[in-house]
Image (cartoon, rainbow, N blue to C red; front, side, top):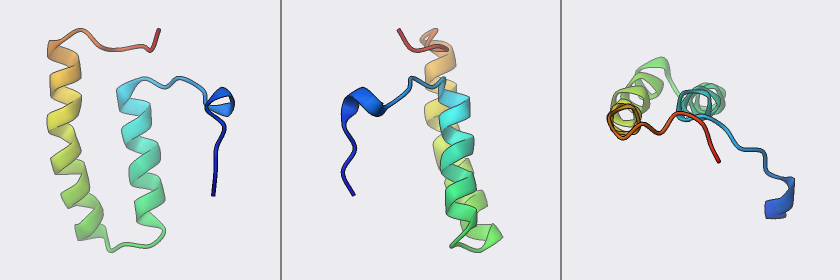
Length: 56
């Protein structure tokens, strides 16, 4: 699968996390999805601390 970067749309970190977790939920157990949520929450917290909420 290839994606032209011009086809990508900017996302805020929380929306990106939810899309990622929704995708994982299609192939993973709920406990695996929760593990991914736990780990990506650290990135979301960092984005909040740095004021990163919307793409440029």
